[in-house]
Length: 364
Image 1: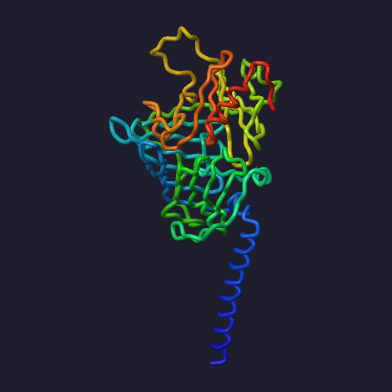
Image 2: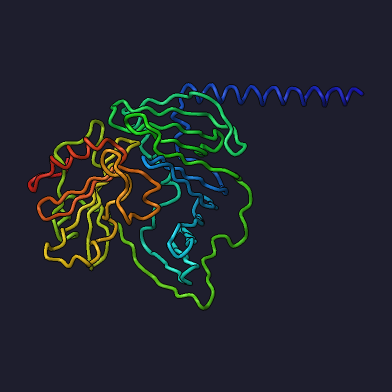
């Protein structure tokens, strides 16, 4: 009987200690919620990601299946098409990205820099926290459960009102964001990303990252190169000198200049950030004015997409995935260059940046 009482007493002590530990941890996170936005720590993650974009003509929702570990991921999703739904599978490995197209019996291997990661959907950086602290206020505003997991709800408010704000549901033990909402600078909900049916740190299905395909599939290989370059290397590497704005939104700094593409074409990707928000500026030589109207736009990544200026409906023919990730887009022809600015900041900021781009400007 005495042993039973001792065991019960020790169990009660352990439960109380665990509870006190959770309270202490929660209090620490409330004192410094920025710790919750540092790099997530997990061994495996699987579930369904639901993306809802809130557009002027109505909301659009799509889902994708996700399996991921610390180094690899597999994503499966289906896009609408006039000839029927198109399933697309991407497998990201340390040395390559595979895109599997079952409807076309085709497998594409991209070597070099990979395609955008599933992590990019959360639109939360984890590598520039000190910079983010200078430009945003972060606080814990509640508690909730997402996919059965306890989360702290964070409110991320910009100090400069031309930026988007965010609400983030974070799982404290792993720092995984299980839900994110992004609001436009004027307070309108633009996008919600939620992880449902989630399993964290559970065994993944066998061979889930195996890109092997049936023998009757066509297998192609391409090289996607994204090379960081210095300002003095731009002409040599790109074949042209890109333009840089003399005005930047408050808090934003140049993060890097990158060369995209191969020998056939080169594109500059210039990135500015304030620690959370990102402004991407793409540039390439404008195609000749006498180009055939039936010729494809060049290069394809610079085709305007998403929600245009002042809430107008998306352009016809815009890729379905782009319609589901609303961004503000500005396209200009400046000094024989096609310039495209993409971000979730205000359109006025993008226009002011573009207006400040002159042929003689240098990076700031």
